[in-house]
Length: 426
Image (cartoon, rainbow, N blue to C red; front, top):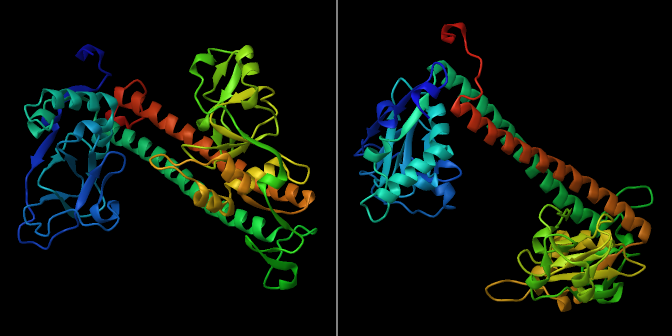
């Protein structure tokens, strides 16, 4: 882009014109907290990131000081996006192999951090990494300083940073909601599948009414429940064709489910493979129908879902197919296998060396606690409700990430301008 194409009020400059390399060392001062630079989380306390493992030197005197609002990047990993803005502490430090720099008055640190993480900057860092005479592909400050960036006024920089910070806050809030819902879901599944629901809609209480519970192979369960294996509860348990039939794949036709399509909250239809109707008929053993319960063998062993009515005709590859009998609802079986009490059995039974897998034999031997059909329906109703709530939050989070990506691209290029005060109107 030529200078004439820059947004009004913007200027093109180099990183060396708006930053200063910093080389101050800790020396004999009390050692500050040690930070590590990460691709996705910026600068983080090293002890937290490495789970309490100390990976830095006992002598920090030669470590580089990183004051608040200064930057540090892993010199050999800058092209991977391993750079961070230090805003957690008044002063911290990083390994001597890091590059540390501060901002001059003409650039806002929050705005510059967004610029440095943008795809155009990463591409420029990769260029200098590939051109480096250093065998490790290090991007030293001298080359870093040569990268060109486009800058609006300081006020517009501040406003852009504020908008993107607000987007990040919304993303973090959504992530916290999902984490909380996942905890609630975990407890709910445990209670529903070990205590059940009375005819009045309440959870049974083994402390208040111990006479309503009995010891079983799966622990303490309601006395009127029975424990049986999937072998006894299902009409049929088979595995779809294991060898990936690439010669049968087609651009359209009958949908073919793979492990990636089977999620604990349902079948993901976003990335389907297809085969011709003739191939589907030839592979009748691996055909699935609405109501069939499908379980992943490899990749994410044990992940289970029910084939929805929308898939009237489909096939599958390397997936276990279970067809429940009259005393077991398909949705209840799927819920049971995905719940902690089912996962524990899956993890205990799965075999394999480099790649873990879960086989038909293990599925047949998997034990299930079976309440009445009416109670199964009520349990599924409640578990489905929280699954749908989590899925809605996950969809909202995905939209927030997409919005953030689009905002970053548009705001940093000046295609979308943010309102600023009258003092910057000119």
